[in-house]
Image 1 (tube, rainbow, N blue to C red):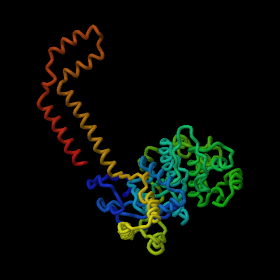
Image 2: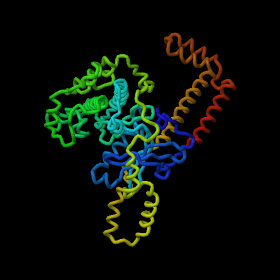
Image 3: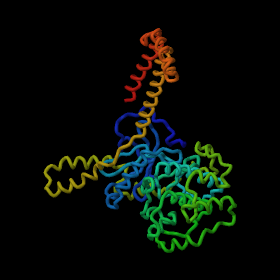
Image 4: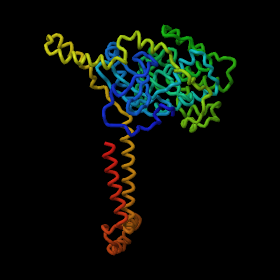
Amino acid sequence: MGAYQSGRSAGKKTSSEEVNFDHFQILRAIGKGSFGKVCIVQKKDTKQLYAMKYMNKRQCAGRDALLNVLREVDILRALEHPFLVNLWFSFQDEEDLFLVSDLLLGGDLRYHVARGTAFDADCVLLYVCELAAALDFLQKKRILHRDIKPDNILLDEEGHVHLTDFNIAIILEEGQLATSMSGTKPYMAPEIFACADNECAGYSFPVDWWSLGVCAYEMLSGTRPFDIHSATSISDVRALFNMGLQYPSYWNRGVKDLISKLLCNQPGARISSFDELKKVHCLNSVDFDAVLQKKGKPTFIPPKNHLNCDPTYELEEMIIEAKPLHKKKKRLAKQRSLKEMQGSLSLDMEMDLNSDAFLQQLPNFKPYNRELDMVIRERETKERCWEEELRKSMEASNPIECAASLSKKCQTKSTKDQQSEQQQEKPSSNNSSPSANASVIQKIHSLSIESDACS
């Protein structure tokens, strides 16, 4: 993985203390989305760099987006994949909800496409394979992303792609279909519009693969396959789909074949799994195991002499933003001090404060700490290994007993009497060799020390 991604270890400075805003140093703003802003931060104890997304609670509540954020955190907590932007921490304060994730310094695909970056066919085919691996992983977990687009595909410093933003993602149970018109119009599949017109019962995982096809087409040509915008009516969108695809003349046959199978109007005939993608002729020579290990080298490497994002984000945060993040600590300290002094408020004002209490500390927003999870998983793995070694040591200390136990399962009833006589002659189980017992005690002692250190 990239230098700032989840391939890193948790580090020895990890503690069980709940992570909060004060554990990070704010470096600069790098992005803005529908529900929040993103900045680069450094965790003060480990010095690791992350991307911190923060969303104002009142704004989310005003746009009925709180449930989406809560669902996004629940989904991200269970995910870890080389082609996803993985969550590391989640927490909240009185104003904002925070999601701290992998930092990817290559920028998003929208940034590069808008600047006329030329992605050759080999690069786009590798991106399709990497994103398909991510989609296949999500599909196995029954997760439908619903917003695959260049804005939500980030590049690391080596040029590999990573899928982000699960704000409108949902989990589909077996046999369940999604029905809401969710997504970004130019990247939404035909069956979503058909569902909005009440012409189909719903849609499922193939919609994400259609969106992948739109992104691939846009990277190769610089334009989208259909001239669809947010204001385009559903009837006009469906008419465009019925007109079919037009391919640039310079595309080779293999690329056209792949795009046509991703942008197939019928979801049942569309490529919708990793296994189906592997069968496409132009990908026959691809080593997909190497793809998963990031051994494939993208032909496009993002520039490293500057941040690959719009510089105006930082200016907006410093000059225009009414509640800039770098002044949060002082601002919250002042608010908390004022609340402590408000003991003589009128009943009406007390009721107003009580109505804000739910937003100030959302009970359903779960804090998350991947560092701590990693420490716990590592400790559990060690404990399992030690338990296995302990079992083997105990068995090795009494080989006759182990052999007798195994022979019982294989011998008939007539031979059990003879076996019983042999067992009477063998030494007691307490007569373990001193060296074996010393080894077992030492392992147990080491386990106790390691457990105390981790906790």
